[in-house]
Length: 427
Image: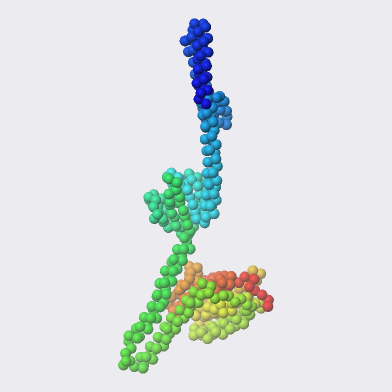
């Protein structure tokens, strides 16, 4: 306590004054005593300073008085700081663990956009590695012009940009920057590739449905406007088959849309039961031979296995019929269509192949999209709705199966339906 310092000073000066009085040098002895007391006090403060500067290499001065009070207060504040730092480290670990588990990329940026921390997803989506890229400016790692505009613009709720991933250019990222703890900023990037693809498919779907329905409706409307009460039977006779064809086309399209909707929503429960694939394929071949486009086609049926397939009979027939009918409709009249059922150690496979025109490689990934057509004119002439392969894809997905498509121009196409072995049985 402070009174110890007063008593110590008073005692020192008093003793020095008494000794000086004995030798008739009271002022001199008091001055000398005060001088040495000041030197001692300065040394004590120096030890305190060294302890504050390097607490692990020296000990605090142990002396009663204000210095001891200062040491105690410093020790108390130090312990509070340690406890606070421990809590902050805990919060930081929780934050890092939480952001590390996010599928979105998170980058903490400091002054001048320098990387202060990044989660694992940041490396996958943005190529920002932690801790290798510590204190590197993020605009040196991501060189997209749209991102640079976003980085240098004032932060607001609209600070969002869609950029290509520097790791995979075909991947689209939604990048957002938000303020974080004062001057800090958070960079958040989310993979929007699938969302953008779905949005494009939705726009294309609406546009395609409108287009597909507009054509037959325009034909019907044109004929109806042309006819009057005085129209001859010859005029009606020529127009009615065309009108009937267009209404059938609309009816088929609506049925396919409803079927596709039911498959996507899972409204109809699957009824798995053993199906004799040979009998099913023979029945589909007979139906294909009744198609208008079937002329001089050759359909080969190759049954390399007599095992049964556990599936929903109606849906399986619909899927394989679509593939076989497409092979007949979209190949020349003298083409060969081969239907094969085989089982190996990995899966069961129903394969439909032809030696027709073939399909260019850039079309293959989009063939199962709704209304996607390789040749729109030829597809409409064949009476297709553009929904057949989309229906096949969803049916196979409901059965845990996969559709594989391969093709070469001038060589033909091959559609393989791979079913898991658990759906293949002996009886």
